[in-house]
Image (tube, rainbow, N blue to C red; front, side, top):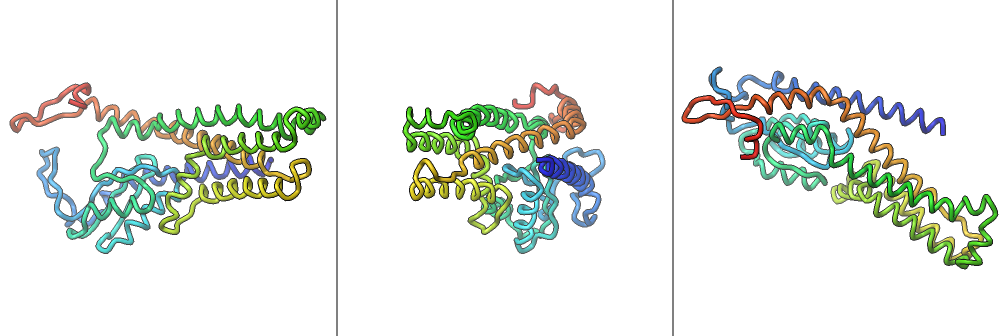
Length: 302
């Protein structure tokens, strides 16, 4: 268990380091562009016109780790005419430098085929704040972890817990041996496939392109554990069969907790960026009959 904590700490450190580098690359990206490919505009024009060639900004969805940013980058670089790609995990977006004949729809389709969401254009400051804070994902993970913890407690009580205190015989007389195993299977399936649905969605969403990630391995291992346990019960009998129900449920519980803590840490690390985008939102402006006019933030969605 100590090794698990050490590994988790090192993984968290690596993730935070990669995120920091990713943001830095994102901020410096325009500085590295060929001046001939930058938008041509006057210094007093806050709304520059894009040339037909890139860079194109794509707003993304569904990326959860550094491996996801790598998948998106490789997918876009596989398009003919794409020269350079910078993908930001915290901002959930990609900047693509490409030839003029590269279709934006083709870029969106390529990303969707890789298992992620994509739209052309940059999010508004309000939307970027929401992405950085990841409130929706944190809320979903918190609910999933809380529910899976309660079900896991019941699973342990009816499984190993009952065996340790000598109540297994009473349970089997009350529920029958097969009935007890059926309940354990139902509880495990609820944890793995209901509360851990995000793992399977992420893991298998990319398999149509023959791309696997850590969630794919977790999904496959938990499913295999449940299948092997079910076969063992049928072959060896419900009393003596060796099962992996609690192992599979525990793995999903740990992954859910780790994912929640990862998002929470990433959210705290982006508090400065959230403050900056709040300032951008509050000092936004529009053009009215050619004049630059400030407007309050509550006109954001008007």
